[in-house]
Length: 79
Image 1 (cartoon, rainbow, N blue to C red):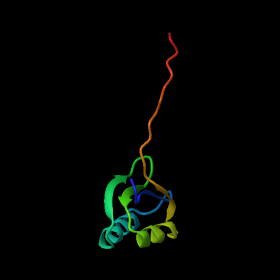
Image 2: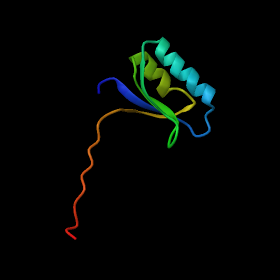
Image 3: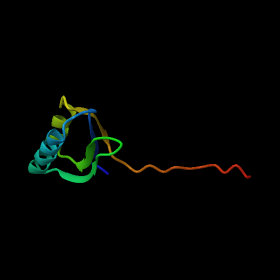
Image 4: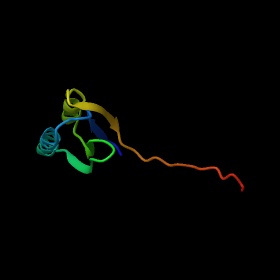
């Protein structure tokens, strides 16, 4: 998932700030993939390098990390 990131905003960030960030991402050539608003506030998106830099340096953003696939494995107990 090259160029795709998860952007998580700090707890308590106003919704209008998040909406403005999403608007700015789209205006600068980014593509929003998913919005998160239950367990965390943020979105996943394909971000051009300059937008990535803006998000990383934003005072409202808690963290930005590369998006990717996760596989969970469980071991059975044999009960």
